[in-house]
Image (tube, rainbow, N blue to C red; front, side):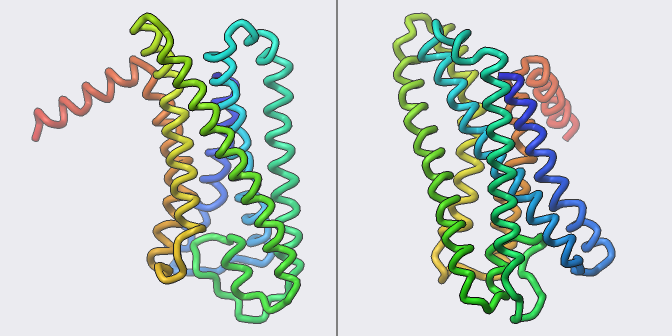
Length: 254
């Protein structure tokens, strides 16, 4: 579990570092400029880390499923070599997906200006300023990626149904509490990540506005990676005690 948490933390850190520093620089210097190569690099890295996040969350769900539903097979299915292979497959598939999206997106001619309506380079905003009919190829690639992400989401839902059924059959209350404490942080991260992303990309066109799009892009690209370490750290009793102590001290002062 901690091996996959390390990989998830790396993907979160990479996602934040891809978008936030440049946005902060532009805000401090009152500019919105980014070079063509810089935009391509930002898009490549952002899609890479977001794709890795989806793959790693799926692998972590499988880890929870095997640990709780098939504990006797845990040593075989989740050995160190198997975990390393699953993590490597997650990163490799994410890089391939990012490379395909970036090369397809930046092979399109841009003829509707060069202003993006976001604080970072993302595919929908670049497609808006393209005038080539070959953008259908990119839309097809987006549809394939969306289908794969939806398949991962369905797998997670199915796995958690099986996990909760197994947990509710545990006779001891302490055992159920331990199982739930293992699963709930991951479930919270999955819900936050997919709910913000799905709402951003599938919201009705009538709801689109520059300010709303900006707020939603921050919600799905910045907030989940920033909150993931905190959500998973809440399993640590020492951290929970420290947070409780800080909150108690703050209320006493005010």
